[in-house]
Length: 134
Image (cartoon, rainbow, N blue to C red; front, top):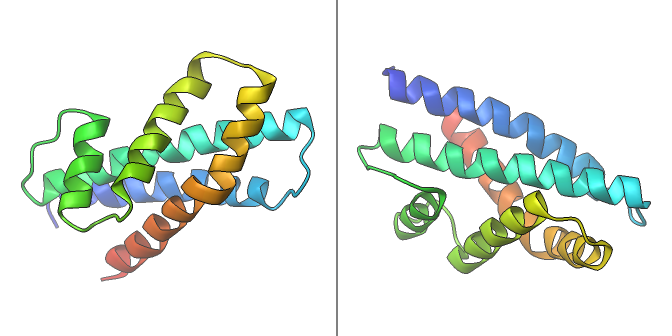
């Protein structure tokens, strides 16, 4: 196993921890303001680690990745992820929530996380769980 293989395996373990926290937060159907903020924070962490996982995996496969957008686009082109536009939207919303807090924005992003982004992260988790086992 090369250093790059080890790196993406380690990154997957970090992603998995954040993903499982997000999964737990998603299970709260009507979150309080504080719970919503936690859900968004767990999304930010899981999303950040997801693109870094993609980057590390792609680099292990011989690709050069320079940015989160590059990692997502390359993953989509290589059929590692589907719904590339959802991933790019998630990147934008992750950037938005990291730098500002507005209650209506938080409510809107929470809904996107539940309906649009969590399913993508869940699929990534399932796919890489298989890759790590191989």
